[in-house]
Image 1 (spheres, helix red, strand yellow):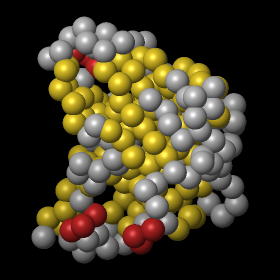
Image 2 (cartoon, helix red, strand yellow):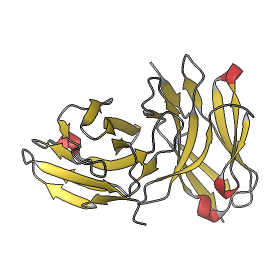
Image 3 (cartoon, each protein chain N blue to C red):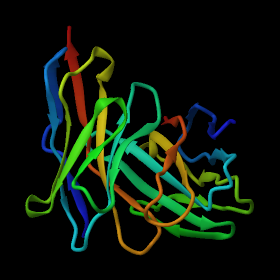
Length: 114
Length: 113
């Protein structure tokens, strides 16, 4: 069965520091991969997605992610974190079957120290 | 441009009562989804719909019923609420296919006493 693992439940970084959030997936075929962000009390917003092509994808708010098939990973990065980036981040993968059913990881909560 | 809305935003009910959560989207998206969000589980798919009058189960459908008589609405009903259904519920929609972004509503926080 398809699954997504986000190994880090909580991460704390200082403002201005770099950030990497890890995501590993288990999926037989080529996956479609997503990163979503959820601010407190809000719904989810798409940061970026990977379907095919260039394995380094750029998203909104200065985020990027790199698809590494050999490692089954899709890690999210940002070179310099802002206090407003404090939120929960979810990695997700689609299943097969054409119905766009997303399988989510458990999420990583990011705290940013001033 | 309202997008996707959910109502109510907060609901407290008692065990055994029937509860309906509403979801409405203004984009005429074909696909609609219901997720529940619980600590440690991320979001889990309850039901989805590929079009009006077409629905199917997701990962955790037990205790829930959905209908979709109109493209823009996708209500979720808890026929007899249980405490284990205390959660935050998110509705989402997407145009069609596997390569389309899902757009999420603001969520409904449901507490079952």
